[in-house]
Amino acid sequence: MAALKRERRRVHLCIAGGRKVMAAYGMVVAQLLLGEGDHVWHLLSPPELLRSREMHAALSQVVLVPVPVLRWSLLPSTISELLLWDDPYRAIQRQREMQDQTRRQILRGFWSQLTAAERRVALALTRHGGSNQELARRLRRSPKTIANQLQSIYEKYRSSLGLPEGARVRERLVSDLASSPDVTGEDVPTGAGSPARARQ
Image (cartoon, rainbow, N blue to C red):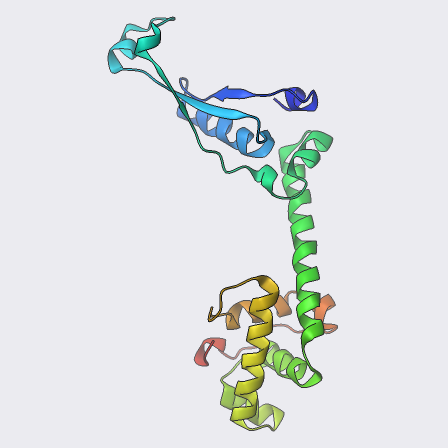
């Protein structure tokens, strides 16, 4: 199928018949390679026809049903990577690398929006965890100030990642910052404190 797509052919893939695992493989191939002009079909036939093992059936005995495909080609570079490498595992790995680069670019944009004070709070949260009160004591600020700064950090984080307003992001934020020292400019392993003890 990769050869057909290299030739810019339109593909109609039927996943009826054969072992179920082959149908599963067929769907994976469809997700990886097929584009908007291609189609996946399932052939419905009555049990009597299946038992008869006939090679050819009357048109009235079978129905072609379109199968919806969530195409990985909707993600950047999937088809081009597959056709370049001719190796789905290498292409998927390359796509993951590109997605990680995109994620880091988004995080850098988020980090650049934070004030110096907000960055200190975000780093303390990532390093040590803990409640707002514990962060306030550690940073020698009032709990209200910490709460307000965290609220601002969460709002900027949601906006940068396109998350819905009010989504709980504390643990996700900590995970992102802890795994992205190139974004914060510091190695900030997650601390032993529990982020879940505080709101958001």
